Amino acid sequence: MSDDDTLLRHVGGTEYSWCKAVPTGTGITVLALLVSKQPELSNLQNALQRIQTSHPIINSNLHFDPTTRTFSFLTRPDPRLQIQPFDLQSTAQILRDLQSPENDGVSSFQLVLEHELNRNSWRDPDDADVFFASLYSLSEAQWALVLRLHTAVCDRTAAAALLRSLLSEMGGECDSGGGAKGGLGEDGEGSLGIEEIIPKGKADKPFWARGVDMVGYSLNSFRLAKLDFKDPNSPRQSRVVRLQMNPLDTERLLNGCTSRGIKLCGALAAAGLIAARSSKDLPHHQKEKYAVVTLTDCRSILEPPLSNRHLGFYHSAILNTHDIAGEETMWEVATRSYTSFSNAKNSNKHFSDMSDLNYLMCKAIENPSLTPSSSLRTAFISVFEDPIVDQTDEMQLEIGLEDYIGCSSVHGVGPSIAIFDTIREGSLDCSIVFPSPLHSREQMQDLIDHMKKIIVDGCVSVHE
Image (cartoon, rainbow, N blue to C red; front, side):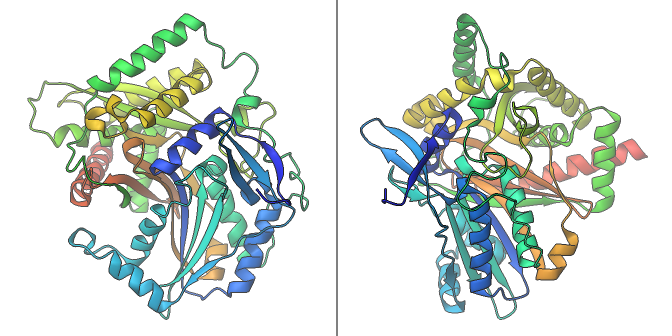
């Protein structure tokens, strides 16, 4: 803690859980951009520092007090972000170090993304920045700009807002989000954690009900089905596979969801559940129970409501379990999955169960043996209630943006697969993160290929 640092605030309960999870490897948020126009380093750094100035929470330092064992955000009067550049030679060495039979056929851009997902600046509970940036020279014609943040200050909605701000800055529009220099921004950004602005009464739960739910969550963890573990003992890293669909199949999928009154998350979860069960040699009638975690952005329903430009972590989770048999169709499972989530949300479980799930996540970190094979897997799959819908096409052309991926690491505590879905130019693009070598890239690619086939076949059958 330097003399210039001032206390922004102590972390809230959900943020504390991320402060415990990130050192284990879960909760490193990465936004990677592949560009064909070489960024001018000083201009890019100035743009990122302007964004930092507008958003104090990402201009903060995560401070740990060993006496009280508490975490705090310390803010600074001026932005200090420094982009770490990697020239062609340095990048080539990193890529050589990542070479392995499992990585054959993986693009240099994706390998850099995975490299950043596994760069953990928060392993020790000590003062550390929450925001880092790197620029990699992949070739004479391609560069990868990578932003890496602590998830306690940057959920998926915040990452999307950062992308929009950065594209605006790089395109010369200078739309960094609005706050006054050194302040908390126009809407007090950074001053409150999610627990402090939950609508009154929404998080209430009788003591006995909380106890029953805690016991239920704990007992269920050992009854849940899982994907086969390939190597549960070796150190883990986060890896990525992608599920991409063309505009026609995407339109059919979205129309199928709309016609049934469900959301895309239900269909993605269903495809994953069916693919996971069918990867095993089981009798057709035999059921397996899988856990699905659905993450929902609470900004619009908090008091006061927050805009989607308000950085921080304002998601909550709902955990549902589903029995999956061999004869069920994707739409049957999708409807059941989404209805379970929707009913739980209508009952305010995204608020009332928040502290329970945070507590159980921390207990799993402290006692891995509470999870199957000490794997730290707390669910089979995680999905987001709503996809990110990208509407930045013109800005992307201005800076030569060829591709981008936004996701977070899961190789500490978490699901076997975490889906980060985007609708981009009318096409579904899912980045799917998994812990390796607990699961192999080949295993995951087979699972994702099967998921895509289940989705496409399910949508085609409806239109025939």
